[in-house]
Amino acid sequence: MSKLTLERAKEILRKHTTEEHLFTHAAAVSAALGAMAEHFGEDKEHWQAIGYLHDVDFEKFPEEHCLHVRELLEPEGVDAADIDTIISHAYGLHPVTVKPETNCQKSLFAVDELTGIVHAYSLMRPEKFDGMSVKSLKKKFKDKRFAAKCSREVITKGVDDLGMTLDEVMALCIKGMSEHAAEL
Image 1 (cartoon, one colour):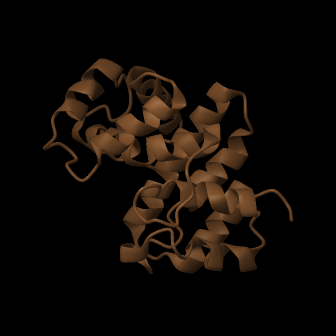
Image 2 (image 1 turned 90 degrees about the vertical axis):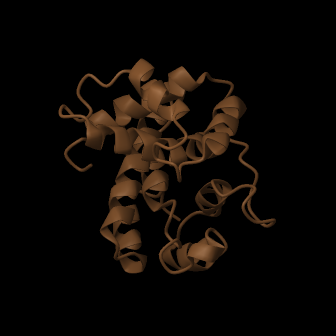
């Protein structure tokens, strides 16, 4: 099995997804995971590929999200460890999910929901991502009505599991997503 690339992840996602907002979310998580990979000194493109593919089964199986990842990705030749990493971001949602153990798994768990808040905030600002500060993002994070579907509890647990502060992870999300602002 060859290493999952971002190009390959995009090919695979197109086979299982049609909704534009899911591609935007895939790009956001991919960008944030790339910044997290840099932080940990890991393979940025590999982490971006995992981030891009993390919701591969969501459109077809929204009520059973992550329960069908293996059946969709094994035939594509995706490595079992990468499949486990993708499944791990739904930890706690279903009894069969994988517990996030690696830095990549913990990062995906933490940034998945957080990218929703960062992206929603960028859409409100005339300057989008430019000059977005952690301080102003934190104000939005504390407002439970803002991007209400994004679970603050999941984000906080993910950040804690990483042994990082919310400020650090927010800064990395902003950095990664800013670098891909054109896609978002």
